[in-house]
Image (cartoon, rainbow, N blue to C red; front, side, top):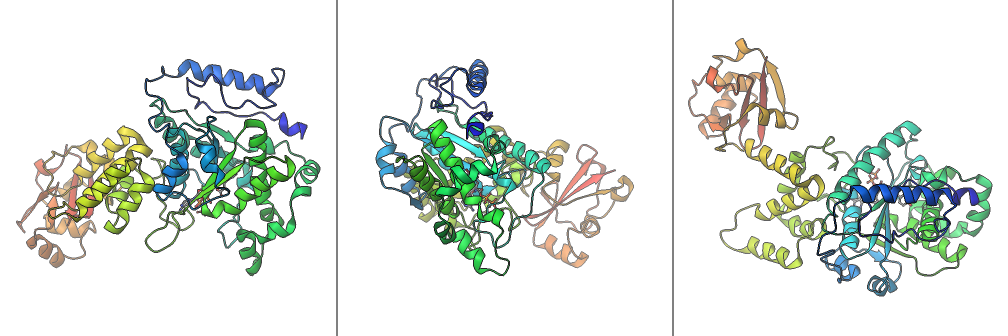
Length: 490
Ligand SMILES: Nc1ncnc2c1ncn2[C@@H]1O[C@H](COP(=O)(O)OP(=O)(O)OP(=O)(O)O)[C@@H](O)[C@H]1O
Ligand SMILES: N[C@@H](Cc1ccc(O)cc1)C(=O)O
């Protein structure tokens, strides 16, 4: 275990300038001769030099009990003990962690819930850790999975870890600037890489009861399946359990949060802490899984993931996803995914029932709030600009940059200048594949649904003139409100 204790810790930069008392205070960090202590000291010093001065109102929700807040918003599925509520309003801030296995280069909408719950803890004055599962991703969490996860090579795990670290830093870093304690980012590979098999069996395995391990939902389901389960995946719960114990002992982390599918792994941790350290005061909290309207989980395995990284999904598409959420889901999403007050959400809900309600107003608010949280003010502006540029009938003058900005998000094609100039619009809309046939294009035009550069066209004889080609480079055709085609002129 000594080898583990001495393992180096990559503690990332997200440390608030107010936190002179940085929270990792238990051994091995108290010993100034310990190399980890020196590393940590250096990291703090570097981080302090670059952070802005503290703001006057440190934590707006500091006095709120985070458990009450989460419960009111529908963000609690289970807690391991009701005593967490009292612990949340004691003088000592809680130290909370949520783990994310780097099984893809970006996190997705389902994972955002963990980030939001961490952010609520921060806003209520607690301290947070986002843990990247560099070690656990090499094993594969069987929770909620009917098949063994494919093995990930080291290169992929490292690339994915860097990707999700960026996402977490960007979101939690940017949203902690109102004087809120910033999150630390750790990677569990830093303590697992030194772990020896014999040490693991002696220090951890001896305290884990096979009966209890088999009774976990994630194991039971898999044992009943034809494929069964590998010994590797069977041990996953102990790895996650030991992470909690390690951080509890060495860093004073006393709460673990996760989606409801993580219950078995989280309780594996509280059990190990009780048995090995004979300590009380470690808590687990799970939030409900965010489900699509067809009842399936928002994830990455199911396809069509709503990614949080702008390189995986543009802020425009991200915004559009929330803008088009059905009315039945919008209030629940406002409570779960935004930090708007409950009063404001109630007002929006009442507004939806009032005559004269402008459709999608609540969705617009939801899309703005979530996009700002995930992509920042700049990302939101980009999304709004693209939304306006793509709105048939919009008055905004189109320019080449705006159309290029959305070209990745809508179908596009390239055509020769000679092929486009003087071409009939009806022919062009069929040639590019926007509309299936000329008769369908004419019908749509009669109904007022065919647009060139957002301007409705009603003349069947309309041909493309030089002045129609935006900045001499592109055309934007729209069939109805939703179907678009960007034509690049080569
Ligand atoms: N739809 C969801 N709603 C709430 N939490 C989720 C959702 N999906 C994942 N999480 C949470 O995010 C964390 C990381 O989970 P995990 O890596 O298994 O997600 P995943 O990407 O959905 O995986 P996969 O799609 O491969 O099942 C866990 O705490 C998990 O409970
Ligand atoms: N098991 C979690 C990730 C995780 C990894 C290590 C932990 O200590 C905690 C959580 C998941 O599936 O994504």
